[in-house]
Amino acid sequence: MYPFTIKRTKKSLILYSTKTDIMKKVLLVLFCSWFILPAMAQNKTAKLNKPDPNKKTMIVEASCGECQLGLKGKSCDLAVRIDGKAYFVDGTKIDDYGDAHAKEGFCEAISKAEVQGKIVNNRFKATYFKLLPQPENAAQKKL
Image (cartoon, rainbow, N blue to C red; front, side, top):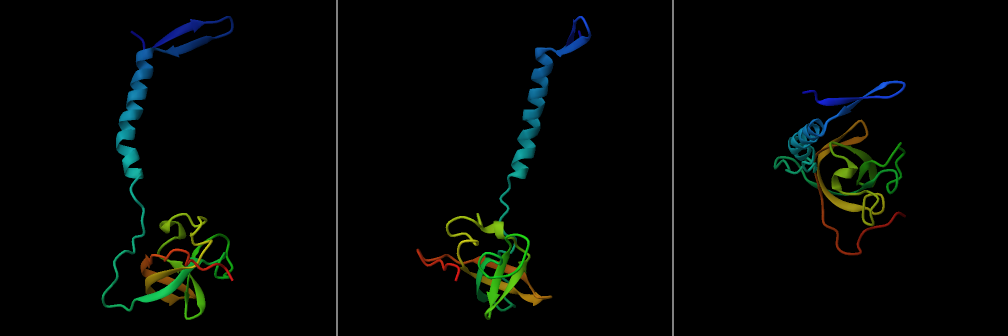
């Protein structure tokens, strides 16, 4: 038989799907989501999680460049302060470390981080970035 029924009205014909046709579509969507959704839900943590033993590791201040470190920009972006000068960070993003606007997020507090990388064109190119645990109530506020 046909996977639809036809209903005639005064002005037009209307096609209706049968219950089995609708159920097939629902099962197809569920089956596809079984494979697609887990792939999309992979943990997207920072890729810079292993330091290079041949490079110098630095402890720096890390925070939002615009909200905390006084850099000019278009949106909230991760930045570090090295030797008193702030640089935007390339190689990792502010949201890789949680909600930037949370109570102790990068836009609300300055944190310590262990980093490796170099400064190129006035930006810090990170090859390793690890946010260090903060002692309770030790998050520094904007000056």
